Length: 272
Image 1 (tube, rainbow, N blue to C red):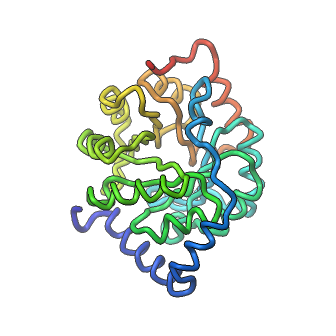
Image 2 (cartoon, one colour; image 1 turned 120 degrees about the horizontal axis):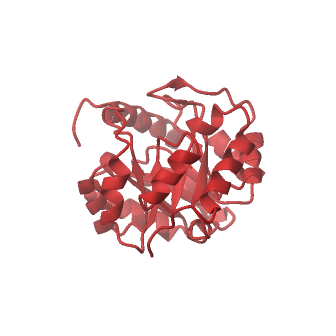
C-alpha cells in the first residue's frame, strides 16, 4: 500500500479504534456473539431482483465533504429508505471521518427487514465477526486497503460466516485483484480514496471487464435519476447512494424516485 495518503490516515485511526474495542470485548467473545446472532439475509437474491437496485446509505459525514446530516434517528431514516423501495441499507460505522458507529448499525438492523451492509474500513478478522455480531448481512472490503493475501482471507472469512462481501475497486488492476480473490459482488467507487478525487468515468471503464456473473455496484456520484440511468447504461446492477439521499430533505421520496427510474421499462438492463 502507498504511504501518506488519505486512505492510510483513515486506516491508522481504524486500527487504533479496533484495538480499543478488542481490549473491551475480546475476540473470543465477539466470535461467540457472531455465532449467536440471527442468520444473515440473502444479499445476492435481493440484488438480483429485476431493475437497478438501490443501496441507501446512513451517512452523517465524509472526509471529502465534512458534515452532511445530523441523523438523530438512524432507525427512522432506514425505515424511510426501506419504505421508498431500497434493496439494502448501508450503514457507516467508522467514527473519526464519517461520524458513524456500531450503535447506528444496531439501530438500523432492528428497524428494517432488508439486508444491511456494514460500511467501514475492514483491516482484520475482528471487524468481520464484529459485523456479524451486530447483525450485518454484508460488509465492505476495500481492495486498495488490503494486500492480496489479506483480501483473500477476509473474503473467505466473511463468506464462512454467511455474509456477503461488497468488494470495492477504483482501478482496472484492483478489479483484477477482486476477481482473483473470488469476489462475486464488486463495487466501483468513482472516488479515489487515496486522494478523494472523483472520476465519474471510472465505472464505465471498469464494468465492461467484469464477468456477467458478477453483480456490479456503482458507488459515488449519484445525485438523481439521470446518474442512475447513466450507470445503468454502463452496466450497473445497483447503485449505492448516500450524500444525495441524506441531503435531499425527503429521503423516502428520493429513494422512491431512484427505484422508479431503475425499474422503468426504459431503464437500460445489464447484459446477462
